[in-house]
Length: 310
Ligand SMILES: Nc1ncnc2c1ncn2[C@@H]1O[C@H](COP(=O)(O)OP(=O)(O)OP(=O)(O)O)[C@@H](O)[C@H]1O
Ligand SMILES: [Mg+2]
Image (cartoon, rainbow, N blue to C red; front, top):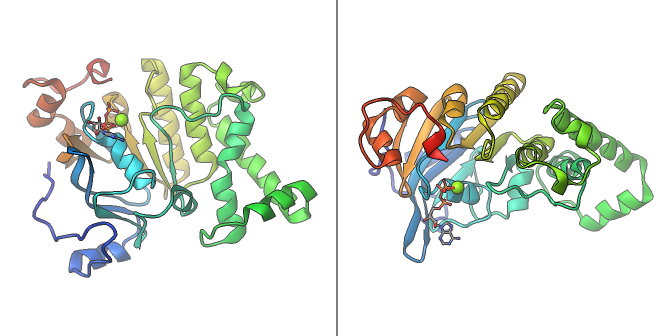
């Protein structure tokens, strides 16, 4: 297990211009998502406090920790919903903290929310079709530039051939994303999202993210509310996704350590906004300090059960 390195190269506040130290140059050149000394304070609450880690293409990293550790806040920061108090976030060498969430999505970073954000009145199909938009805009306009929403609308209304092709591609992506979940979602594609079970809403949330064909996905508790067999099914799905898309980077926040142990290449343990430990699942999760942080007391046996972590 390695510990976080509070003494690493100083990183300027998020919006104070680029640092030019050796480490910063490394990160600017490197592919993947680099989080450097990231902090987010909410009037005295240090939700995230100097967190550094990276996610390489093709890698699966699990972000774990007790309730209130700062995991969702990290996801909010990475996806642009929250702005950092200090620190910075690099995506393939480009600084992304400070960009709007839509820009970040169009650069290929997709996220799910801890609480499902499906629009209840939309059908399952339309919800996933909506998810294709980030990918569509990236394809259609190149380089992550913003499309003109009026042109989008006009294209939709006029049904121009180019737009028709894009709509067909969007439908293909939406169908693939739904069919990934076997019989769970596809037969229900014409039903309103509100009619889905809680577990199926979680699945729809993931399908919506995958429909955009992101290069990096951030999943906030994808197995919340799922029973052990449903959790195992989701774990298999994520393993299949990795096998199919070897360059996909996955950051998964999850309390269910059975899932974490099976899919994570590396685990980053947060506690009270700080990195407590990093390492392989066995190294990080079985460390006595991590067990203690979860349970509030020392244990001698490794943490096996999911039950106390939800
Ligand atoms: N918008 C906000 N305003 C004020 N405090 C916040 C805000 N968002 C998060 N916090 C606080 O920051 C801390 C970290 O919250 P966060 O939601 O990131 O934890 P978490 O690790 O995701 O927890 P959980 O496992 O329960 O989902 C908590 O103390 C929380 O109350
Ligand atoms: Mg959370």
